[in-house]
Amino acid sequence: MPDELTLEERQALLDLARRSIEAAVNGRPLPLVHGQGLPERLLERGASFVTLTNRQGELRGCIGTLEAHQPLAQDVREHACAAALEDYRFPPVTPPEVADLLIEISRLSNPEPLLYSTPEELLSRLRPGVDGVILRDGLRRATFLPQVWEKLPDPAYFLSHLCQKMGTDPDAWRKRNLQVFIYQVEEFHEAHELF
Image 1 (spheres, rainbow, N blue to C red):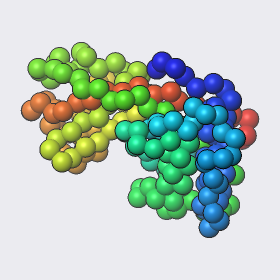
Image 2 (image 1 turned 120 degrees about the vertical axis):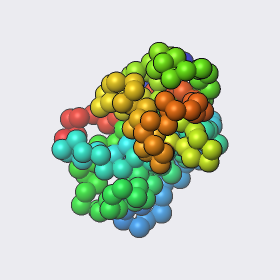
Image 3 (image 1 turned 90 degrees about the vertical axis):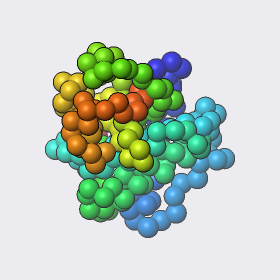
Image 4 (image 1 turned 120 degrees about the horizontal axis):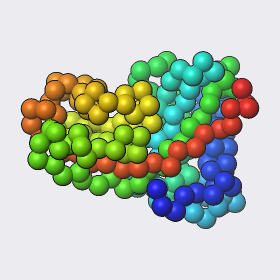
């Protein structure tokens, strides 16, 4: 992904995410974004996902957006809180859990359409470990970040699981042409030394 964030910018976002989670979980006001001395580039529009895992490496929450519509710092703050409190797959994070969370931020590039004619061509055009994938089928939509390739490295298996996430038949991608978009991420996380 071009134009990656500096180490200082990444650390500022990770600090903001942690402070936001601590505030949200404890019912306190969220940290301000503007006027807080954040690097200027973090106030430009950006899209992000925030992923939370616990000490055992288990997913604890993951929420984000696919399209930039607000300043990146505000987007990270919003999704850090949502990952902790609003991911329907998990109970809300409790105050004692916060210290045991590892925060990962994924900054997304703009999604681009991936054109293909056959299921075989779709498989050949995907880049495992590089591309995040969005599938659309009518009003349904689902995405997997590029990091999901680590758990689902086979492209056919990856697409079948993504169809299931979208709420359709796992073989939908084989039976009809779905809308496919790809994007890349700049992924960074807190140092493991925190554990």
